[in-house]
Length: 175
Image (cartoon, rainbow, N blue to C red; front, side):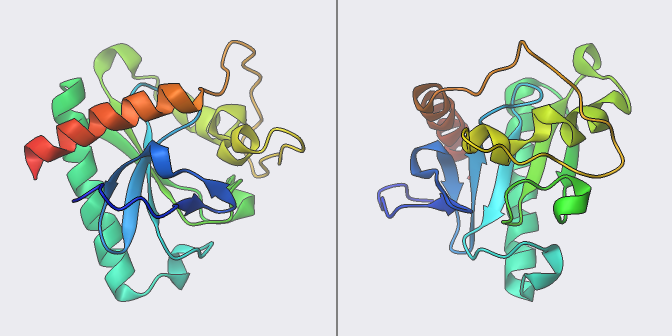
């Protein structure tokens, strides 16, 4: 993967070029603005569609091959083989950016919390669109209650770029 090309990359309406740490011809991986746990990243197709069912077969293959590769890198980086792979497929499932994306969250014994993780993903902590869009934050809907977490704040572009640079180096070691 070459990061030499600096064409602007968008996640829904948000420009995320500097947060991207891995690209293929059909998708990219980027660091999360409000990670639930360390290493929480997203894999997103370049083509902006909202639902998994709207991806063509090549995109499905590329997205999930990328999920597998990124999860392998995160496993080495965080010394764990475990991870949550999550998709919020539409607004009713908690999706706040209407652009299909797959969450990868490395898990290890010290941060294992069982089903509480899903409440956090469904709640404010998983509200990626809200963190990106500060003025009129979309509220997640669905079955899980929204959790208040006053201690968590969106990361700065600089913090996310630094993590993206680190993950890019890690990805180069498994290519």
